[in-house]
Length: 95
Image (cartoon, rainbow, N blue to C red; front, side, top):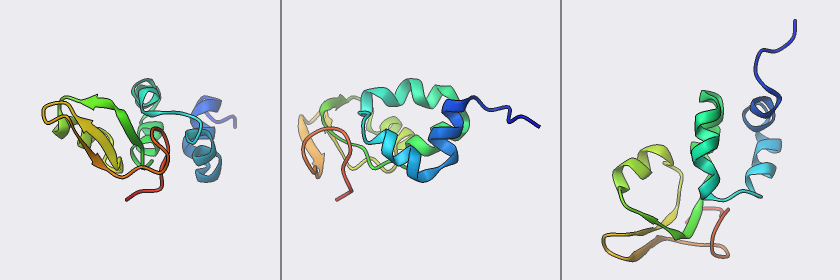
């Protein structure tokens, strides 16, 4: 029987090693369409420790709900950077 999930869903959410490798080439701006792709991909995206020092976060509560493993961002209300970075924007390995 053929799997019903699209290939992209199987690659991103079905194999943690392959998914992590692909997520390393993406940035936080890519999370919106990826989260809308499939619930399994939304879960995989939420587990990535994104660290973006350039995207301004206007609603911290919604941002943390969507990306709970995210370790950095700019609070637009305070204009202060939160979290730590391992090279600026994109992928980092947490605080």
